[in-house]
Image 1 (cartoon, rainbow, N blue to C red):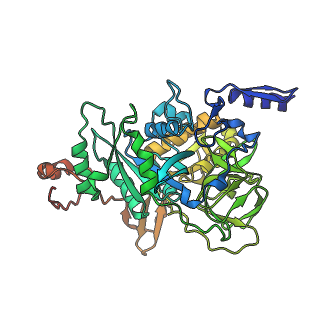
Image 2: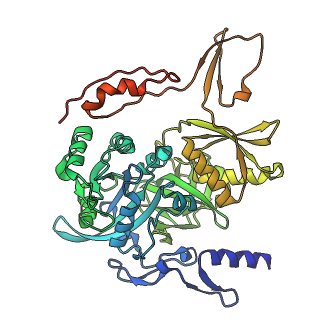
Image 3: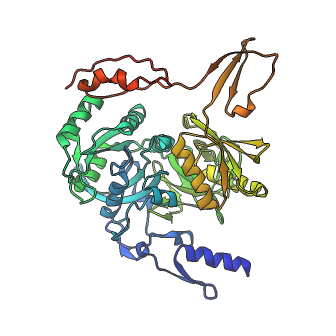
Length: 507
């Protein structure tokens, strides 16, 4: 009876009416209402019940790699990425427009409360477009990414599955810090960049000034910039055609052995680890055996499909497509982000993976009640499956007992991680004051890396000759009229600044 009670509670959490005796279910979610898809021409359901039934109307074989476009939306915080993603999902009929519902892809509670994107989310859309003189159906994989610098690792991982990006810039705010950072991430990845000047409906909007910034800072052609307002829908009819016509299709060999890149993962209580993957070469089908290059373990593919926008079974993923895989992984340690998965008993060249994460701050995380250490350990293990940018090592404190030393990309990243531990896993924690890593050198020229001040050895026989703390090489972009004031702004007795001013000719 307890298991039936848990199942009933789970189904209620998804707002599905379920009769345990007759095993009939009916969806009551607004976005799960049957509707006629404009391309597939048949009734679609977009809700979590895709776990129960495969949708036979989606035939991915209709979309070879030349009919696929994979792209991300990148921007600074609050420049309208998530709102633009909502409008594109509505334009393609992937979701229905519901008044009062915004940021559809921001699914975490912490995202809704803070109004920011924390996790990159993928959605597959179908769109019909006249391309090269012929009407064709296209499969578009959209990835909405975070804008804050603390979640920059999410952006870099998302770009690995894309061939192009929409660089969104606020028409009033102009180019800002993360606009520059995200541009160079896409530029280094050799991706096609489509500038989108958003919020042109604002009274303070100045699109011409933003175009000049795009030209002077990024050397982007201002005539190629799209002028849009995601809030009112102005200019959005030009976005998807630009994606199809400017962004190249994904490379890959359909006939080659399977190679797929593990982009992200999260833990499901009933299905184990669910992996988000990008198919680089070959084809993946339900029931096949796959292996991990990193761990060498083999698994059977129990379920495979796309995010449309919820998990939707298709039974197959083809070259260039992005989707999910359920393979029976029971431990989050088996799903290593950046790993290459392939068919068992085949020899392949592993994919490059991702750059290692560089943690900026470290903090101790301890259970509020010492007896909850195991619960905290399980919660951290499952949460790091969904946030691979956190480093975790065990440590102990005489005052707080057993806990973990965690490395984060910034203070906001640390706060969000603690909040997710409490909201998603019900674990109450005590965190220590965040610190940065130090390097100490002794008289005998030996060095030791310290992340926790309590771990510094107190040996009177060893004399510390030098100590290093992290420094930053920063590039500050500002108008020439403010350059003479920069040395006074940077003057601070608590910090040591070494500045080198260089003047760039204004265009």
